[in-house]
Image (cartoon, rainbow, N blue to C red):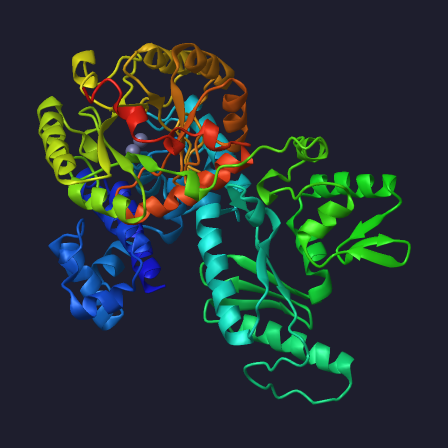
Length: 593
Ligand SMILES: [Zn+2]
Ligand SMILES: [Zn+2]
């Protein structure tokens, strides 16, 4: 948790520096420190006890000093000082898409804007009119942006919610003596953002001892005993260290808000109906409606307690039994959106979905040559350690100066280093890759003769987002036509909760990919998950391969693969649809001779 606290401080400092127009490289380095801290498996306090913090790749001397100051004193003076330099509500304005930090600085300094509300008011009253450089079009964009920010208010990223839910489940297992605990709701279905976290627990048997006794009145009556145990579980839940506020506390249901602002609900259900409850609370609503009508056709009733024929309960202990009672195979949670999965299950045509064990490598990673925190060797060793057969190092190209994009000479130098690393390793390969910028006119940031030397070419858009849909689509299709481009990176450029996708005509892109045998990336970073589940499925229908890449800037981010896999599963993708389920030789063809 302390890693997260310090990461937030570095991110906030970077936000403020952006508003104040400071050096972009320094801003980037603060962001990098935040990422590194978030991804560190161990507590930075423990780490600092036995190692110098500046030994962590990507953390420089001055950042290390700030972290040490915080660890020792609970304060970070630079952070406090910077915080005072902008109105507290102004940082939120950075979330408005299309409103840059420079504009925000002017809104603060020239118009006294302090937060979202005062900005809305100023727009409403026409107070921004006449500001040089801020025309009617920009004001219109601001209004749209504010509506966008409001629309996701309270939505949490899959990548934040899942680790938090797992932490709570582990704590409940430890402290409440519970064995059967599962995440339910849209989080279990793997949606890219979720409203709140639902957790289900099966109550322990009355003859199993609980870990602590509570000061409740004891009774020999089993119902009272049951209620007492339920209360004990809920009390343990609301007293967990991550709980900031208790919203509800009953015998079978509790609700908390965590320190990071998530609402988490815990329900305690009888063991014998755990499967029915899990199925019911996983949803989706539409999926469950379909199941209920199937049940009705068979003269059955289905609810959160089980499947019933008249008074007789015929299923409910586990989810498999619920589906089996309707003559259906188990339907994986990620498919339960009423997008044809019930019909496919009925016809025994459910797809075989991709799993972590199918993944043989990561196709999107950065090293220190561009803006990654680790060297080629470090990235390679870490990938081999998790059982991968390859990793593609895909540094940025020279156009992207702010992210350390590299020119042709540096690329050559990096490729030679990769050759040396490969010569020393058995059974594992580093692919020479690039994430080359697609320039404004659709041409690429490296010449064909440079791209030809590489094993794996991702082409991505990193600037000029404000183009019309048709021009943006043309720009990308132009890149797809280049025979050296293997894959289009993060197709829509969206950053969940932060930046809307730029407009592209997806079906035209898919057509072009199909014609030129180009893959689409599923960027597994939880802020991106781009392409999304719907586009994954469209790609599959068109026979286009999908490459899941984590966009790792440090080895710990290889773990983000799981969010890409979840999204791919929601898109009905199986191992045959995923490029990085293929062996390494697939990528080396033509380069290895
Ligand atoms: Zn990128
Ligand atoms: Zn990248």
